[in-house]
Image (cartoon, rainbow, N blue to C red; front, side, top):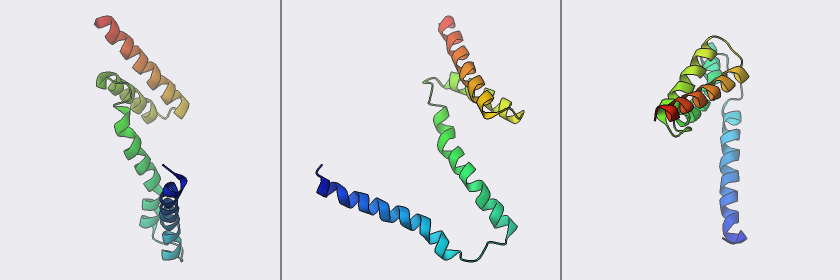
Length: 106
């Protein structure tokens, strides 16, 4: 693909990105006073991140059983208030152990 054919795509992406960021700033000039709307907007990044990453976790290992072991381990440790590093390392270790057990079983 030549540079002249590539440039319109970059320009359209730049305009769309700019509009997405600037429209809320122009639409909401006054501070948002509603506690409900503020709390709703606070949790949007977490909800979007979860919706994007959680389904992929089950396909990351190639085996649904080992992925479920990792997810279950991560959920239990996170529920108990462990740190992100502890949760991630323990989930990876649980997946590795589950894969090892499945290899031994057959």
